[in-house]
Length: 419
Image 1 (cartoon, one colour):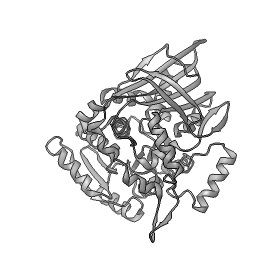
Image 2 (spheres, rainbow, N blue to C red; image 1 turned 120 degrees about the vertical axis):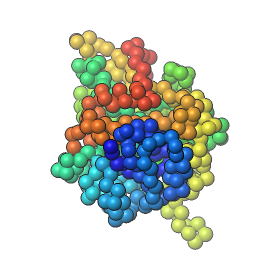
Image 3 (cartoon, rainbow, N blue to C red; image 1 turned 30 degrees about the vertical axis):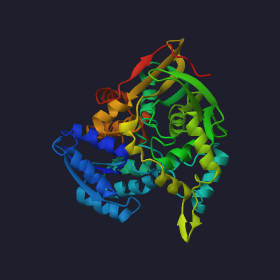
Image 4 (cartoon, helix red, strand yellow; image 1 turned 45 degrees about the vertical axis):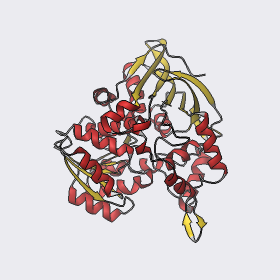
């Protein structure tokens, strides 16, 4: 039996909660903690009579270290699953260290205020020395590795789909398919249609900051930065069809380049429709993607947070979204002295996800791996302490769990390559 705290109650957290409660022999006690406790209570009520998991709820401010420690010490969880905003990763990690519990999140740390002087100075130094300009990176959380090692605790970083499953696919390919991996292209396709003129399929604040930032890829030991959405390809995705995809920077490129330095080139592509790009560019041009505070009628507001309040809640998109996602990794490399290609991916249906857990597939493909990552730790399959990313662990039990609990893999040895 295990006691678990889930921080957050958005779309991803809702999926993870439902999936944890399907494994009520492992996740026997679950506390859902969020600023908006009424959302926690609603999920608890929805699951009443459907699970043996003992669910409690509470209100928490994830930026309040003392409040986090009070909750953790009272509830005594084995693991805290941070499924809220990545702004709070570090403070929740600090609280886990203080209270001797494992930690898991689904996205790399980034600051809420990108103009804060101390952070900005370090950021500009990193841009100059390393070469990519994204606000999110693993450097802050990697500094926790030794702290967690000394306590015998695991901090599992980025255990969603991408990052998360994509890194497990890399570790799986290295273990079973290649002696040496030469190139890696990560392709993230959402072929869903929600019917709105404009909406984001995960947190608008994070999504729009990510997509509007410069892209980057890793090649021959160096980072190469390119203007946002300047590299564009078309690709025909299994189960979805031909889609436009754009090169972005993504955090798993950073960790894979560090942990598998043999790979000569790593790129990440995500699909977007013309309408999405057009709307985003318009919002950016009028200043609604700004992250710095502005004065509005005597109040300080952050434009992108105001925009988030206007846009549809991603958690509300499930019932109206149709179509599939297709996310995976295409490799080239060498096995037994021969050149080889390999593609491993997952397809997930939006309506099937909604029927199972009342959520669209983008949240499903993040929430299921989060549950599976916690399962790996609680069952002892992953037990090396420290702040680590998914590719540092044995991929086999994790991928077996994904296959079993909703995200089965598909493999092909003759994929169409990306130019």
